[in-house]
Image 1 (tube, helix red, strand yellow):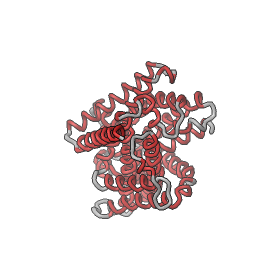
Image 2 (cartoon, one colour):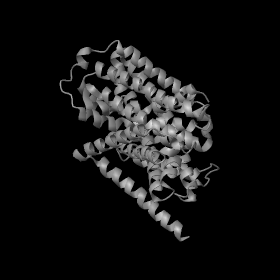
Image 3 (spheres, one colour):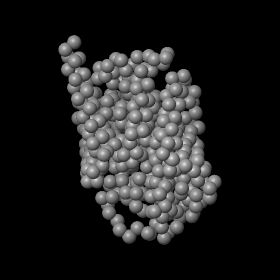
Image 4 (cartoon, one colour):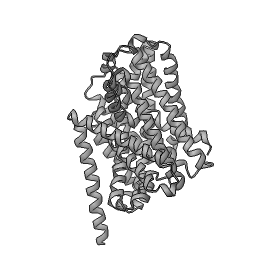
Length: 419
């Protein structure tokens, strides 16, 4: 595998459902300066990419962060709890995509206010891809390259056309600037960069990984950041804040309306459905592999690796789909994004610290590692404070999930020692 192939994997993993789902939320928090939030989140992702690349080169594994956390912290309760939390994090990401699919689907059908159609669409797409993974995920996997090209192409076209119609008065409409709002928004939208970690999984197949892996990571984050910035400028430059607020769940489609009329809205909505469906397919199977690696490390019961209906790890796939459905139909889009970003900021802080602990083996530059730790810690703290101040349910959900992960792992380790 060459440099640009690895880079395309990172770009494809990041660009997609996250930007379609989170753009409106970013503008709601940071206003017309939401594009700065994507810059801040992108810088944090780039700094963390350094630790991920050094760890991946030294410890190449398709398990990714599961391997790094176990190497740094041992295979006990702490690493096990983090690995289970990471699994739940990916389930939350999948729920975000399912919710976004439902939001864009109802908007395309002109039924944005439908209280029954949204959960039906969101749940149906999850059930569909669980079923597809049971009967033959490889067929869908072969279409992923086409999907990446289509969704990236549509976004680039959206940016190119949209920049020609940006109304400067809309860009200048914001009279007050609060950096704290930009930071809070960057924490929420961190999930839109979450896919950069998948580049590390190419370490075993990449030519000259010590050289190409860091470049691929930084290139993919940089390319995605530019697209996110331009897309945000197009949105805030073509729509007023009230218009964005009213359509925050499907704002990219709404922003295409001034460009190409109803046809633009429909094209972008269809592209969003295409992208979110693709992302669900990609992320609903990934956690299953993660569960396998965690079970092999004796941090989860072997039960999770059992076959079902002739599918390897079918039990894990069925449980994964069930939890995704529960989250999708329990939390709203914003709450899912907030909980998911808190989980991944916590996990990547632990990954950065893992690289610090293993810095002599990974031959990492300590100042870059410290910048990565500072970035994810600061973003996590800012987002936690923001949610705490507004009394968000997301804080309780996040703390409950993390506590549950570590309590379960502690009991599992105790039971293991008694055998």
